[in-house]
Image 1 (tube, each protein chain N blue to C red):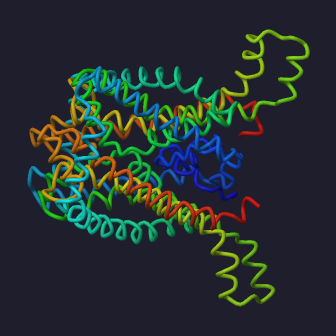
Image 2 (cartoon, rainbow over the protein chains, first blue to last red):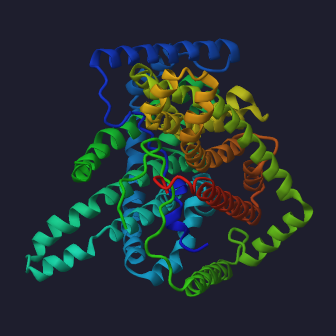
Image 3 (cartoon, rainbow over the protein chains, first blue to last red):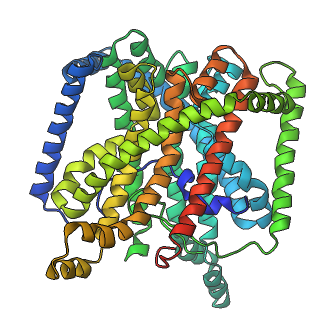
Length: 273
Length: 274
């Protein structure tokens, strides 16, 4: 299984499905109409599924529950706790992953040694880490933090290695021959080449780590957003669970689509022009 | 090495790029990789020896357990069960995903219409799928099947859409001019153009669906890999859990590798994509 890391993009990419046709112009009025129709159909399908299955919550109740959670300050308290853990684990994953990724990108030896292990990390599902850390560390802060770290790490390693390989060696040699100052070489040759994969590393790590955090808090925590959604599930109040699912989605959309995706588009703009 | 933007499902089927720096000495690479794996196992053994508690069994215990599971045939029963559910789910995903992909590829209105549902399907955290799968379908096979279908759907639909857009418009006009029947157009124009895109949609979808399907089984199932992991967790058998995890990882990598090779072989004639 040599060289599998580079040949297997499929398991090294978690979801970001944007669902937009790249570079196609759709009339604004048409697309708004289609969006509204789409939301309407989702609502109709949901209502049918609810009446047929009987166990799904109604959307009105879900929104009402969202209101009471907001009024009771549950949303802020649990998000504060969770984001704390999330950021701690994510930063650790980014630092360690960057070191390993740079090593893999630079040295054939490190690549040969670490590729297979990284593949194993990519293939292991987050729920395993969540269950293992729950057994190892109990209900403390370590469980979610370590799960976030472990589920984000392999994605950082792969994408940082890709970033390092993207550094154009010929251009750097030429810059040196023409005595381009180091800072300018860094900002105009290396930074643009590396930016795309580096941001991708953060995006994929965020998506995968958030998924891990939810599971770790579900199984091994007594606070945080994952725990709160489980609280409603255990109480057999699916409207409360769905309310929290909407919040999870909102958080991911906020961080990934509104914060990171535009940065990525900007950083990789030069490639598409 | 051409650096590509991160592969977003559906923007392009990424046919495996032929690595430009072919390993000159594959044997040496393999040796280094092997030593690294051995080293990892030794570290694990050392940690297990230091902690010396059931909570972290030694690798030999886990390997022993794996051999037992293989000999007793339990592994095959449960993997067969999980893979069956995934295949059923993919069947559903293809059934819905291909027409939806056609609609998206042909009409801008449909593209805007399906953007929200496909985005939602693709970005819901796995936990949500697992819980709703359990709540709606109970512990039968319905939950995992529906969940894998929903996870795979956006990958397939968006790739089919991309394939439809890639079809040569000149060919279609010529077919119309010569009044070819619809069946012939599908068979000789669309099918060859779409096959590669559908395949890569399946490949991407599989990696996601495999994990979410197992997660759904962790939450509620009567058999399957996820179910066995959950049982080991409840009985506090860390050794069993690690053994099942190892099998899970190995099977995932093998299937990935298999699909990868199949893709290279089947679509070798499409030089533009290779």
